Image 1 (tube, rainbow, N blue to C red):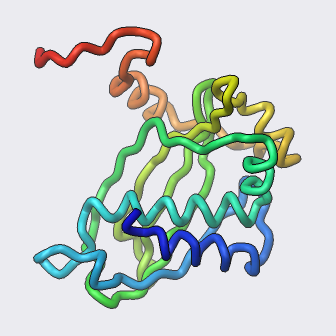
Image 2 (image 1 turned 60 degrees about the vertical axis):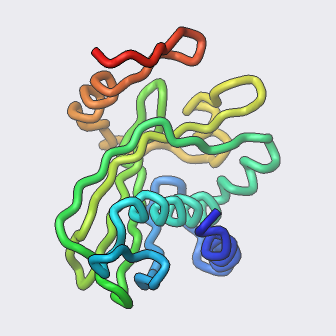
Image 3 (image 1 turned 90 degrees about the vertical axis):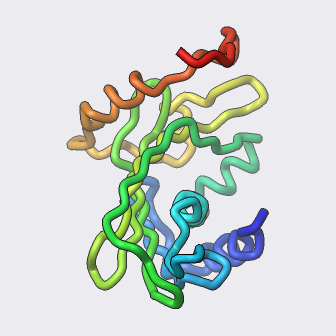
Length: 182
């Protein structure tokens, strides 16, 4: 909830920005605010992933997917994410959140999101997402058909993402996942 006002602003502004295709790159200009920093006076590591939500919202709205989701009763969920940090973003520093779909498998659509300042990557994350409905997960084929998008012919999910997803997977919600330390 701490980003609710910025979320509303992003959703409002995205409707007035240029349309994007589902596989295009979204870029959202941002500034590090006092509410984003920690005692070291740089963007708090926990804020990066929260702020990256805003980049995904921008892509969803500008590609037309946001309206389709609402119409069909779909909701976006994150099911995996990993982030690497290179440099710290400082208070009042201007940067952009760059968001691009980099591939998909039978379980998720994967995006790379970057925090970029002065043409340099400060942090990069890979986010596994999917859409769900009351009937369960929405297939990628149904998503691509809904937005009238064909994945680029050269789009291939990097092998490390497949390995990473398998390595960090939790049991299905239909199976027990007892809390025990191994």
